[in-house]
Length: 222
Image 1 (tube, rainbow, N blue to C red):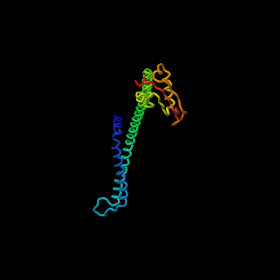
Image 2 (image 1 turned 90 degrees about the horizontal axis):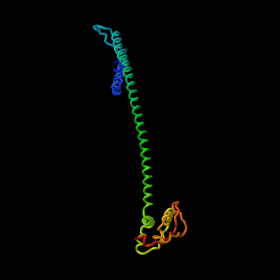
Image 3 (image 1 turned 90 degrees about the vertical axis):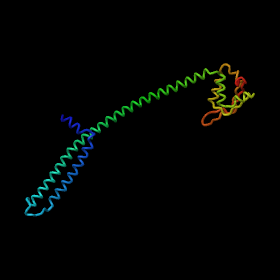
Image 4 (image 1 turned 135 degrees about the horizontal axis):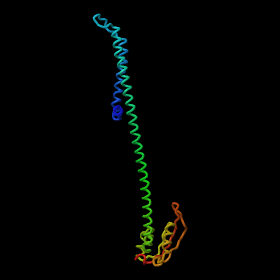
């Protein structure tokens, strides 16, 4: 029972009460110290009708203020003990909350990493699916897409009757893609010839074919 009472008195919620008691006891001690000095130097009247002589009155008031100091110090010490207990319990509670928050953050980080891995896997799967889709796309469509990527108006010009084209500064990787397309079966139905012209130039560190001469067939624009 006593332990239960002490536990309730040291509850962190009552910390402000003990701090208030401490502040009040400090005021009491201050008043008691001032009173002792006052009682020691104060000259009471020497009225013969007074019951107690002046010296006795001085000692009486000195004792009263001394008791005030003693009680004030006792209350302050008592309140300080419970303030310390309540503060420690509040610190322990905050420490537990902090550890729980850190554990939760660690769990969230693990979940975030798992989600990132899943996203990477999904992105890779999407890229693979796109590559497979491109591979099954008709050669005519893939060749038209390549030409539109380098010269957007080339198919319109092919429809108007022009078949000879010169593309400038084609990146090497684009030329490699075109070479792979033209190596497929049926490529001769859409493109008669491809010839590199000029030199290989570099722009922003990327090698480019200076002039790419292409002879297309009207069937590509149909």
